Amino acid sequence: FTFKTAYMADCYEPIGNGTATLGWTSSGNYQKRQCVSQQIFTAAELAASGLSAGDAPSTIWVQFPYNPDIRTVGIYMGQTSKTGFESTTDWFDSEDLTPVYPEAQTLLTNAEPGYWMPLHFENTITWDGQSNLVIAFVISKEDTYFNEYRDFPFYGKAHNENNSLSWFGSTTDFSTSNTGQLSNYLTNIRFCTITSCMTPTNLTAATVSRTEVQLDWDRMYQENEWTVEYGLSGFEHG
Image (cartoon, rainbow, N blue to C red; front, side, top):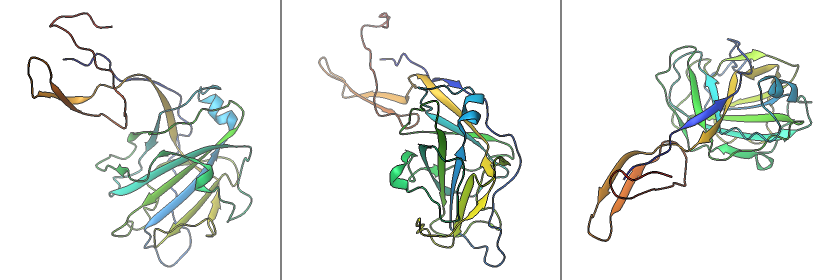
């Protein structure tokens, strides 16, 4: 038995190439367990990266300024006509956004400064070619606090005024009634779209008989559908 297809993707140009970091700017308690950062990327920025109407990115790349400690990451996305946030409580409700990268996912560590890491979506949204895009990052640590100022683990760059609204809390119970801080920070991102199937790993065959066989494999990312082709040794695929 063989899996024919391989993982391939079309990637767009990066949006942002800065080395700025986002952190809690108020004095006092730096012991934070959760950061929620909602950021608005304009249609012009998306188009300049090569994104076109009808595209549905399936992967987002983010860039590390340092080796982060282990934390839980969630990403939500939606389309909007807004170009910025009007106040420190002008949040998008997560129920109005698509959870493209559920918060159960764990951000792996051991990244070198400047390293770009792909986060593969479980759900996608299709860009209409005209709307701006809001991306909400939810970064959490359940058992301990972030290290010093390292609240938000990605590089970014200054963009338009008030196109970012962020909250840092000593608990993990964020609410849209919380007061955040406005900034012009946007995370460096790069979108990719998968153009063919990903190849599973660790394929094994068990309970082999004349009439049946049990196949097991590990999925590569978050895929949940597979195409299996089988036949006599040397058969033609397709």
